[in-house]
Length: 231
Image 1 (tube, helix red, strand yellow):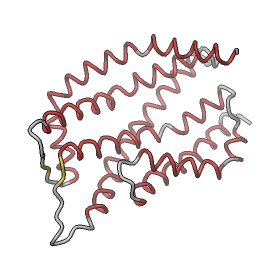
Image 2: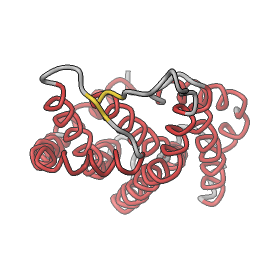
Image 3: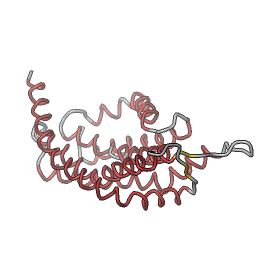
């Protein structure tokens, strides 16, 4: 019963705190809509792909989607801040620790997104398109290109949050370091499932591109808990 009340309180606090991030996301989305042609050209040029569209409304809808994804990308620190501040009270986390969690989470998110954009995404696209031939030439839809790249970049940014999530659980007394270390085999299974869900394509290569760093981050989380002296 007490846990239910704490959970209900957390949801109410999150609802109140999330209003400001939502307003910020809406404003950023409008601004990014003006910059979306420039953003598409940057991503297209980076991956060296030619794009096409199949419906009259597709270019406009693709720009709207990219503007929303760009707003999520830029506004992620506000979203992370809202979640941590809502969770601070029921789990008795000090304001200093909350600010530290927000700072490190934001850094890790952008580090993961950058890692994906600069390294993983080009190799993943190159591998997938390596199966083309003289008889099979790619004709990539603009909408699917935006969805694929945006979800891949945001997904990598989110999985890089794993050490902070583990540290927060340890600090809040929800899960011990020994439990994380003892259940590595189950972590591997969950990592494989998460990689299958978060990757935009079902192929094993792209799943491994996400699952490999995710397991490394899991081990980094255990080391972080050890440095925090959490048993």
